[in-house]
Amino acid sequence: MHRAHRTLLSCLSFALACGSPGETSVTGRVWLSKTPKGPKDAFSAFALAAGATGPAAGVFHHGSLYAGTYRAVTFRPDGPGRGTLTILQTGDRHTFRYRPCRPSRGYDRCIEVEGDPFGARRYQSRDRWRIPGKAADARALAGAMMRVAEAASPAPDVVEP
Image (tube, rainbow, N blue to C red; front, side, top):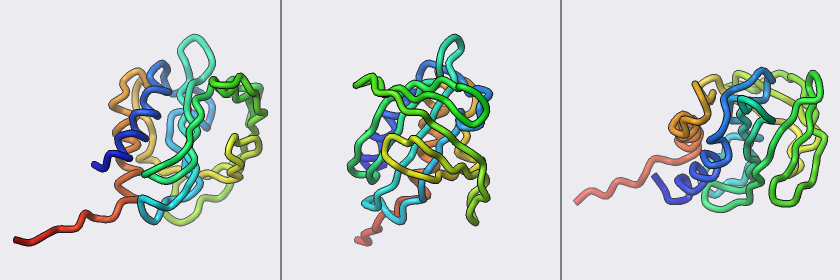
């Protein structure tokens, strides 16, 4: 696995290591603005896991698999299809609205969003990108992110002796 993949996985695992998938449709899975065509292709992604006693915790990422920016967040649902994102570093709050949309071929779920910290308007997910079990088990998140990274990474060059 590339070092960049491990770094992204570590950031996401850290942000989600204290909850479990919750009731809202945006929690418990990895969402992408698009599937990157290669490790240098920029995209936005997020994952949220509902906390057992508090708001959901998660992370928003924008960049490639090699470089990017992320924001650790909490998410507190305010009603169906909406909630408040709080950026942990700054305390900035964003009203986050989402509604289902028709997924593109190859995806199982789709949401259109307003209030994304990086400006994305649409995210999609695949059923296999679900974060199973308790998010406290960071291996579950790492496994979900590995499936995403594998879909974006070209096969390594094989050098014959």
